[in-house]
Length: 261
Image (cartoon, one colour):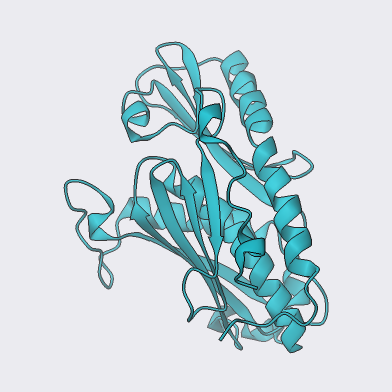
């Protein structure tokens, strides 16, 4: 399932980029051969490899629910060359607070789109490795992971490891910034750096809120601004939800799909 029919890459024309829309984005499936599934996701110059692996065990703190539930967790990292100057590699227990915060955000968001009772005794680990950071790395990670999870679930069903599709509604995420009183959707690093406020929004396909994280970076903002930010996130994410529909139909239309050798 790694052929050209699966990638459906040219979903947003580069000419459509503006302050009120997502940056041009692409998804390349089966980017790495070792994982159960993987996706290279690009939003503008931000590039993230998202990959799903499966372990037939539960975390120790969930052992008492054996046979009743599964688990999903995510890990996030920037490779050193993803930024300029070089980002110092995080090793062992030396994990930055920002990294831990982003990992928790990605994990919480992804668990909102899966019925864990349908993957009993399995732990899905989603690795999000940023290879080029130009703003929006956490939202790009979420969006790439959503597609990687679709592909992973299809393969787990085809292999007989799970009996029912555990996926709920897909989730899309972006950030909206206030820059000199103007709204900016999916800002790159240069614009994010000068933002007065920046809000990360994750919505499901029914437009219910999954996650909101926002802060006044330089100036406070009003309740009316929050509503406008949410409305902009909602409208700007439509091309991404359209993509999810197309790629999901393609993935699940293939019978007995297994991981390419």
